[in-house]
Image (cartoon, rainbow, N blue to C red; front, side, top):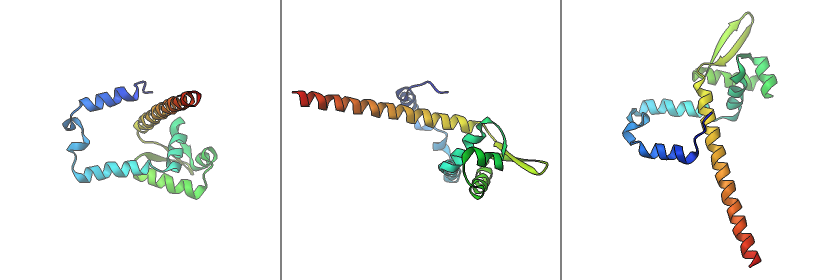
Length: 140
């Protein structure tokens, strides 16, 4: 879990030059692959499936039970996740089990969630300050 504050991460990022950014050195075709990877993770049902697989491999029935998604929907999203290399499938008898191919996906999701949490906290604090100012104006 990442414990750095948003401003610490921002400060570190600002001190790095553009040449330190791996993506800045990539050709457009490679950047397209990066963008496509993020597009795969930009769908709520797929994120739900990824979260479901965090605890280990599951078959389609288990994924349906855990996510509440329909069978056709789960199958469609698992195919997209597999094509992107995010999940892998393993045949065990008549069952196919899906698991996360690379756990870095969870680190990425945790980074995004932590960043959003910090942003929400900052916005909440700003709103609280505005309300406090409005209350002071009403009293005066």
